[in-house]
Every structure is written in structure tokens, then in C-alpha cells.
Figure 1 (cartoon, helix red, strand yellow):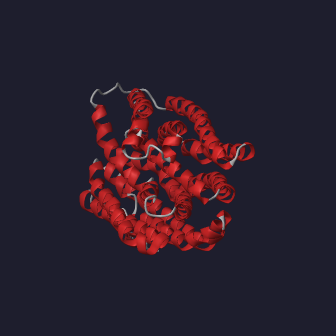
Figure 2: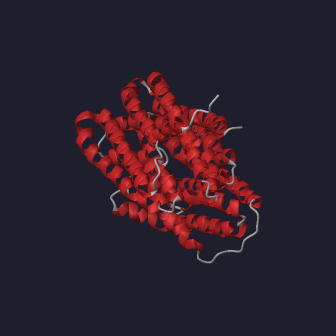
Figure 3: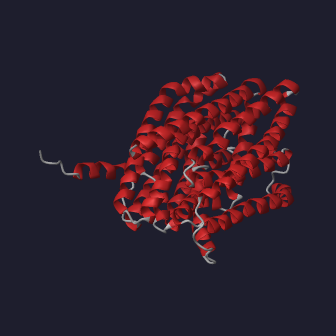
Length: 441
């Protein structure tokens, strides 16, 4: 099967699973808005955004490079080396859990959040963050070992099931405020169970790596050199809108925040269709680079970009048509998010067309080269939120996000072109297609 067909088929299966799971989460959020009110939905979105940002920091970036090192160590037969890497990764998560339990509440008090929703639900928030961080590490391992479906299933299927069951129990047995609190506790404890099962599957998968090479004592320096930049890259890309929601929580009303939060969650869903394409092809790209097969490496990037960009354009069209209908499930007021949602989805097209520059820079041993563009993107978001949100509200927030995504995507593409000497955008694929000579008859 050609790479393009495999990318399309496997990413379609993963995306379909994501759609099922996200549909459950979507319904939960809609019912929270309908039955418990937009204000509680706004509180819920703040909690989830905080959990996402805390959990991505807990492994100290090691989960962001887990796929890279899993693929490398599998190709080289370095099981012992990868076992040490995993022990360090999970150790970071456990150490962060202890630090959060001891210092979290005092820190919230110091920054004036001692009476916030985060403080009131601190323990379930920490439990959910811990479980999510463990699953991030598990998933990175499984994707790098060419088991992307197993890598994604905890987040795509079982997380929505836990959220749905917790909400239904809170709805049936409690009043809204008490039900909201119960739901968070049930989510935190339930996701811990999912994380432990997923952990067992990930650890068992390590047996697939040959054990041919001894441990290298200085390898940890490589881990840190890649992990620290990539945790910033991950925050600015995968969790861009969680950061944005927390920034906007001081500017937008809770109702507008809930509307924009729903738009960002829909965007995150559709963007997963693009992320799945790169998740499927990442191990093959690493193998081509490890084998010094530059032509195959460029071809795989080009084919991945083509599939990802096609999916992004299709998803933009679908959201432009179906988005307004989806938003009305949350209530009449949420129809105001239709135009902002379309603007956000344009950002997905921009990201796909410009290609996986950060990934290519890391493969070429230049992970730090991505950081200036990441900083520029976040700085652009701050500036344009300040300029556009007060006068234009939701549309201002959407355009601020689109401008920031465009700035960092173009910046990363330019840095990859200058430092790695590689055009990672979709235009390179079209140029290569035109350069292929037509065989004579």
C-alpha cells in the first residue's frame, strides 16, 4: 500500500474514532449549557484548559519527544536506552504531582485565585492533570512504536466515555452546582483508571524493541536538548487555545467565553484530522532520516502535507456549512460563534499548507530554532487580543488567533528553509511533481 493510501486510511480510522469521542464531549458541553447554564459551561472550560496546560508541563517535555525517541530506539534496537528514557518521563510526572499537591493551593492564593473555580475543585483538577500527563507519555510511546491507534484510543474513546458517564451521574443525582463538583471528581478518578490501563499497554509494547545495544550514559543530554524546546512548541500549538481561553477569561463575559470556548473545542476536533496524518507518518519519516535517505524523507513529508492540506480544506468547508447548526445545540446565543468558528478553521488550513516545520527542525538536530517563531506567535496573540477583542468581541478574538497562527506558521517555515535547507510547505510537493521528467514513449 502506498504511503498516501496508508496515511489516508489510518488517519481516517483514527479521526473517525475521534469524531465518536468528540461527539460525546460535544453533547456533554451542550447539555451543560442547556441544563446547568452557560456560566457553569464557562467554568468547566476554564478547568479543562487549566488541566490541559498543567498536564502538558508535568512530563517536562519528555512526552513531546517520546515518539521521536521511540522510533529511533526501535530502529536501532536500543530497548534498555528507551526504558531509561521512560523511567525518566514517568518520574517527572510523579514528581510534578507531589509538587502540585504541596504547592498548588498556596500558589493560587498568591496570584489572587484562592477563591476561584480552580481552588474550589483543586484535588480533582490535579488528579485529572496527572492522568492526562501519564496518557500523553503512553500515547507518544505507542505512536513511535507504530501503534498509533493504541496511542490515541485512551484520549479519543475512553476519555469521552468517562466525561459522559460523570456528567450523567451528576445530572441525575445532584443539583447543578453540586452536580458540577461531583462530575469533576468522577472524571478525575475515572481517568486515573484509564491511564493505568493505558500505561500497562504502553509498557508491554516495549518488548517489541530489540535489545541489541547497551545504555549510553550521556544520552540524557539529548533528551533535555529536545524536550525543553518541544514543551514550549507543544504549548503554543496543541494548547494554543487553552492559553487563549485563560487570557480571554479576564476580557470576555462568561457567556461569550463559553461561546468562544465551544468554537475552540470544535476547532481542536477538526484539527485532529490533520494531526492524525502526521502521527501515522512520523515513524516512517524518522526511519528515512536515520537511514540517510533524503529523497524518501522529502517525499514522505510532501505526501503527508498533501493529505493534511486536503483534509484541512475539506474540514473548513464542512465547518462553514455545518458549524452554525452544531452551535445551536448549545442554545440560541451560541449561534454568534458561527463566523468566529469559520475564521478559526482558516488557521488550520494555514498550518497544514506551511507544513511540519518544527518536526523537521528537530529531526535535523535544531529543536531550539523553533522557539523564536513560537514566542512571536504568542506575542502576536497577546497584542491582537488587546487590540481587537474589546471593540469586536468574539470576532476580534477569532481574528487575533488567526493572525497569531499565521505569523508563527510562516515564521517556522522560513526558519526551516534557512536552517535545514528544506521547504516543508505543500508548494515543495507541487514543484517536485512538475520536476519529474515524463518518460518517453
